[in-house]
Length: 243
Length: 243
DNA sequence: CGGTATTTTGAGCAGTGTCAAAGACGGTGG
DNA sequence: CCACCGTCTTTGACACTGCTCAAAATACCG
Image (cartoon, rainbow over all chains, first blue to last red):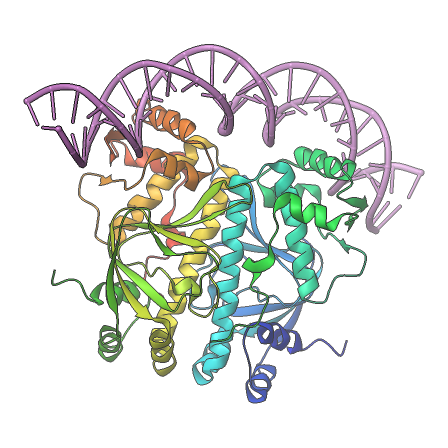
């Protein structure tokens, strides 16, 4: 694959911040090591001391933490181009787990190299900062989703967000997308049970807002779905930031 | 008040990252404007274009967003020393609201001055970055709380977190603390209704895990409460980060 | 083809929400 | 100092969303 390089990272960072050709070149020259993870395996474990920061080039992952009783909550989804461990760039010990959702290819860059680069090139540091800020914004929306929407709107919102993000990364076919997770994992992301997720999906389907074939999702009435859950992509900050 | 200066910010940033005396001095010399907000008034509004970043020196605030239907969700609490708008430092448009919980005194620093300083002094930039990372970690825990704990554990966890944060800022009396919010606001923070928050508080009280007098909270059995909800402060990253 | 994971369905239950109203409390003006 | 008013807390009765447990149907994989 000619694409297995840091190009994806450059493109991702470039969508939020303006990078000079030199900045881009410097990013491309970062040292890294390519690794593959099987579905379910851990990229980061809580209490670990991460020393690298991975960038997903293929496949999907998710962040997750659990209560003392053992119930799990997925707190975010990572798609190709996402930086897995910017969240721990300057933190010594990991506060949550990251697991592969599907088989995933990851380029792992030493944290130290990233820090050095962002000290040397403020524009790069700024791009990384923005990346973290956007993720924080997505957490806020996730809290709103889990805290204040009922099951139907909650499921709808997750599907809309995923669609918008895939779209922004140029990963969505014209015809919906392949949802890379089981209903049980959706339940963990939504603070529901898998049984209820199933019922809710069929409800949306019955309402003509959703069509499924295995895990392939289509939106026969995108406007309707979007409208139902009040999805508004502005919290994703998809445009390039000025300042 | 002799304390109305950026000293608090220095102290806060200094708890996470090592700052040189020169770094500290540079922070203290940042330009700012002091403002007071009444309880309920907005420090930041969604869709605004913030150009300053406030630091709370007295009082409390919260971040909040609402669904299309108008139900509100509080996504974080801000205590003295917290930077209100680091979350938008490099973002053009605000994605959520910040409101004063009580009357609050805020020092507002121009974003541009902060950016310039963090470009000039990487250690300061790093401290700000850490600040944002820690807030992201708190969001993740908040999602877990709202998504996967029942009402009793959820309330308990909020009280524990608040206690731990006040304590870390040296703001907790030896004898519990004054909770600066109504039960309705707690409900908005927890994804519950105020009626149920009330019942849950009395349940905790009846169980001897909590004592209340107006809004003053005491913990007759701190270990029990902490243990009940599995509170573990490590996600607050209270220690100074090494690298 | 058998074995495992996932999806689907049903029935009954529990935890929270809704609605409504009655206390407390704190502040205000007379 | 007291009556009044708005906000907040507390309580009750009842409805309903989403959970539990269990099993069947289906898909996936070696």
